[in-house]
Image (cartoon, rainbow over all chains, first blue to last red):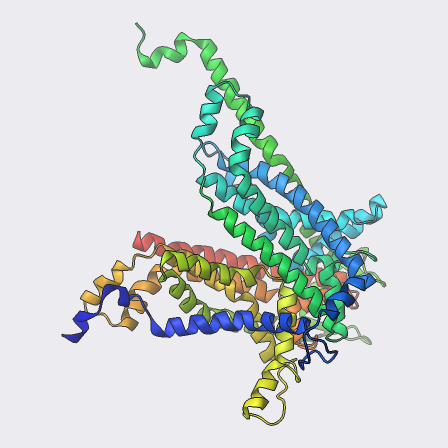
Amino acid sequence: MARRSTKPRELRRQPLFTWVSWCVLGVLYAPIAVLILFSFNDNRAVMSWTEFSLRWYGAALENEGIRNAAVVSFKVAAIATTAATIIATMAALATSRGPGYPGRSAAIALINQPLMIPEIVTAVATLAFFSILRQVTGWTGLGWLILAHTVFCIPFAYMPIRARLADMPDTFEIAAADLYATPWQCFRHVTLPLLMPGVLAGAMLAFVVSLDDVIITLMIAGPGETTLPIYILGQIRRGVTPEVNAVSTILIAITVLMIAAMFTLQKKRP
Amino acid sequence: MAAPGDIPQADPALRRAQRDRARGQKRMRWGLLAPALVVIGIFGLAPLSIALVYSFLEPGTYGGVTWAFSPEAYVQFLFQRDIFDDTLGFNGAYLRIFGRSFGLALITMVGTLILGFPVAYFIAARPERQRNLWLFAVTLPFWTNLLIRTYSMMLIVRDEGFLNGALIWAGVIDRPLSIIYTDGAVLLGLVYSYLPFMILPIYASLEKFDFRLLEAAHDLYASRVQMMRHVVLPLTRPGIVAGCALVLIPALGAYITPELLGGGKKLMIGNMIALQFGSGRNWPFGSAAALILMSIVLIALLVSLRSGAKPEARHG
């Protein structure tokens, strides 16, 4: 019979699926490609191509609003990432090493809580909570925004660190303990160096998530605390401008670099 | 000579040392967990309790709340109070917004499934090296700023946008179609935004799929469609259920997509909630709507967890 001759390799191929996949890939990247392409366009009308130019990048860099927003964005992301990564590393060590114990799965569920609730709910609930705290304490400033970012960055930093720990055999740690290393020495000289790729991956993820956040920041940020995405949102609401294309392209480039680095780090097997 | 079982009794000092060690480990464990639990406990859970309290208070004139008990926020959800004689009349406006959001979120889910499943399968069937590349290509948009991706979609579907330009150039239409600010545009944006959320979990459950099962099915005279229907689909059910939940939840609470591609006129729940905390100045009502949304999402999560767990028991 003719159908008997089909080779095993061919069996897994679904021609329709292959076709759909290439189309999906095209659809996923086409809008971003158009955005990036037109950020290099020397024309106010945005959509008709005239010639290549870096004019809008220059305009974006000279724009006071964009510069201030970038400073706020990076300040918030850097501090929130550092705090979230340290907290997540500690939590990952406590939840993945050693035998199971009562309360562990509850602790993991609590750490992942920010992922399970729609962002808009977290945003308005945090706004309500902070408005009370702001009144009671009288504190204002960037601290509140950084705090809110830290909370939702923790689960993102936690995931790759925990995954790395799960892949890591604990034989080195046991050997170190046998050689009279204190728990701190064992962590500092054995666990941490082995865990570092996971920690870095977690930090990058947290940084990207913080840098990209819109909804929570939109609700919480006080006057003068505009981050880059909030600035971009304001500009888009007023109409499409080529400067926004340039800033967006820069943000995309940062994300791509971070995620590519993260991918390479995670591929290194312990 | 003592038998092995006697050792603990033989040396009480050893037993004490062991007990001390266990206690020390426990202290260290909870010490390490403390910062995470405190930060998320206080700044993740407390706000939700505050929102619950707020939903039973009266709105303040300039936003915020007045500390007086009132179930008005929940009543307002379904009824409208007449300004003159204070009687309640049924008002379906908010219910319609919830219904619309559900409809859009469900269509988004089905759309991402139809597009996402073939991609996940295609990636899983690639040789190992190409697989990583494809995975990276799918993950990258997933991490790219949602706002920027939505904005780039605006560039495509605007009246003078890329799509209309291409269609006119190809001679399909002679006047631009108005796509932006319609339900269709919102739907397009939602599918575009959340497609990776569907592909990744399905891929995760297909990654370990044993393609030799297809050879077995082929030997038993299964057609390609039958192989999909009876071999691949049942085995990827956990991934499909997880993907559906991962798409449905953010799609239900979507804010940016309907705001930009729907022009702020086609409201979804997310926009409605944000509006109450902004120009609507009705925090109690916003809190109530947020809590209702959260309850719906948590129920959906529970359902998906249960139905995702089932096939594992069946296929062992």
